[in-house]
Length: 184
Image (cartoon, rainbow, N blue to C red):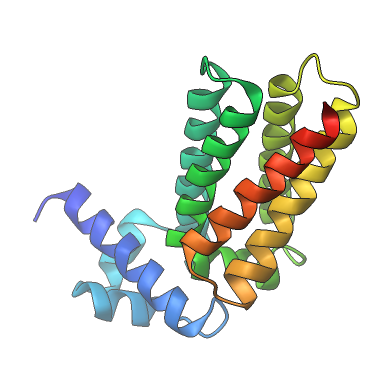
């Protein structure tokens, strides 16, 4: 098995075990057992449980940043751009919802590294909204409303109520249309 295959198996196992047990109840031994590798192999790739979790979070953030880049240069009108952006972001976060839950509800408040990533990612999303809403009155207020609305859908509808992704996206689309109607 190649090094990249081993690292990928460790990461996939970590996602699975973190999702099942949470961050604090997961041990490196749980991850390596699931991955089918020796404990020493884990430490060839990661220094700690925190480091492998951080690499998972960074992967998700890279997907979010890629989505921002994709839509910032899109030729669609602002409303369509925001709806399509939200659809993709919610799909990514939904597929990693257990990791997002751990990140937001267990680690965000106790670890400065995770807090810094959270703030940076939120700022990038807000900047995307500000750029997309250029030319609209009260774009700062609208960007903050979109941020708050998106955060509520993620935290409450996806992570707590465990709603179906299509229902969440439908609610986001309705909300965006109402926000844009209010800006006209």
